[in-house]
Length: 235
Ligand SMILES: *Cc1c(COP(=O)(O)O)cnc(C)c1O
Image 1 (cartoon, rainbow, N blue to C red):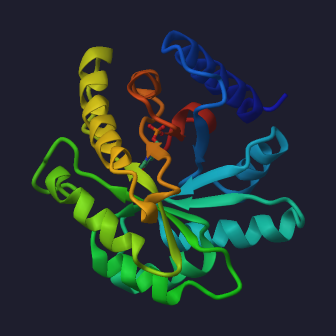
Image 2 (image 1 turned 180 degrees about the horizontal axis):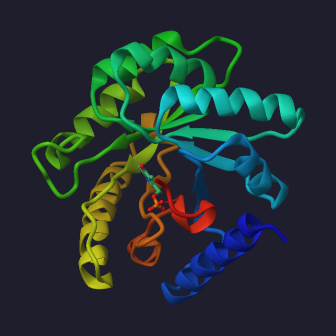
């Protein structure tokens, strides 16, 4: 078994254990393998081990890998998630190549993504990024402005609003990790509770990385984004 296959099994094991500890079903959390900085060969190893969803931060790097994997493994359906910051001049690449985007925190970016999404592709699946711990220089919409942005994005024709994403500051211990992830969960639940018809597919809470996936799952994450735990350390 390759190292990546072995690492994947370990991460899936951690997720299963965290689900059990939280009294959640084993299939309630999806694994997004974050392949940024690693090559197409590493992604291919993970695909061979059964992984299908991949996250990329740097858009051109992601597009290169998407193209390489499609050529190397024709017929294998992968889902590519953009999880990095998006400048206006990069929206077209995202709209034309990715399946999901987790990092929309301004209406202008969503409008461009919708306008640029090619007709022959399924609508782009989108999470609104929330700045849940409020750092002034951080990406993400303020919690108080989140519902308004979610509603505005839901009106755009070529996008489907799937949920919320956040990247809280690193905390070393489980309890503070759980506390901050739980604030994201509360915001998610408040929006869900409105049962708005335009938010029918609002079902995704993208929370947790290698170091804090247990706390994220305890808080209610439905998608953890794991890089180091699968592919190893980055330079
Ligand atoms: C890099 C990155 C991850 C993965 O982080 P690890 O600590 O390597 O698991 C997850 N989410 C985002 C947004 C990232 O940029």
